[in-house]
Amino acid sequence: MLYLLGQWLGDLWGPLRLLNSHLMLIAAGTLLAGLIVWSRLPRLWRMLPRDKGKKLAADGGGHAQGKPTGAGLWISLLILPVILLVVPPSPGMGGVLVCLYLAMLCGYLDDASAVPWGELKKGLLDAGIALLAAFCLCQGKASTLWLPVVKTAITISPWLYIPAAAALLWFTMNATNCSDGVDGLAGSLTLISLFSLAALLYGVVGYQPIASYLLIPHYPDSARWAIPTATVAGGLAGYLWHNAEPSRVLMGDAGSRLLGLLVGIAVLMAGNPLLVIVVAPVVLVNGGTGMLKMALLRLLKTIGFDTTPPSRLTSEAAAQQHVLVRALHRYRFPLHDHCRKNLHWSNAEVLLRFVLVQAFLTPALFVILIKIR
Image (tube, rainbow, N blue to C red; front, top):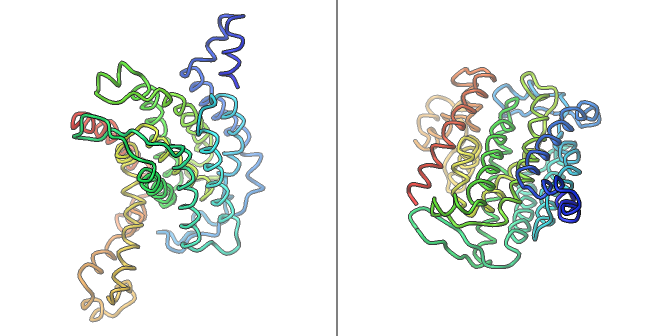
């Protein structure tokens, strides 16, 4: 809306042309979303469902049990007017926003359900949303990607792009969700990812001189996508004010699924799917390895191996288990649970150390990615 006002009224009064500045809209969206969520969320979270605890968590789920959860619902609703105010209309933007709010709604309904949804149900819903979002991003047309080693851009047909992009979106949604287990952890890591992606979209792939210097394709519309990315990051920062240890409210699946989907969308709009490793390395290791462990254990069980945790077996039976099964059970996943339970890190230590690792790795990996190219 502000962008259109700048176009219509900029000639009448010069300063209104600032409303056509993507950087100004990024700053306005980030600030407004952060202030609105920070100020209004405490008045709304009493209407949220209460966390039931997670038995598989390192603390048995007692730390979070009873706290308001599903705050992603209110965060997303509070920032929606800001998004509509500052984000210029563009092809595919409306459909992507619908997908983000569908992901939030599915997560919230799971948070509020008396009986948590099964993994198959959640996985299929996530897959459907990811496929729809991938279609909205490419709009059924061929897409251009840039990759390491290859100097020229690659054109991908929609028949290949949509399933591949959907797989990436599904993974980022669930990896972010799996990282949500320590006060402020998933939110802080995703905050770094979103601000990094906003900077990449606006100042690298969206700015032709920089893109040309780095031998990266220039995407003229990517600067527009930096605006909703930064706006959501601002709202997330407002939420983290209340989620700091000891947290007063939890975002639940409603927040983590929306955030994970947005990270994947921003990565795809930057034109290089491998950027997800750059902007979210700790999230992928922390949450992604948990999904990998679960998949491997189920595969081994299907083949016929005994995958019972060694702690539930006699020492003789545990010694007879396959070495891979014993190795998988030696480490807890998500990795933050291993650090708390096995390494005896406090929640504050987990948060600070994970954030430091991601803040260090993101710029270093980006430089490596660019130099390899």
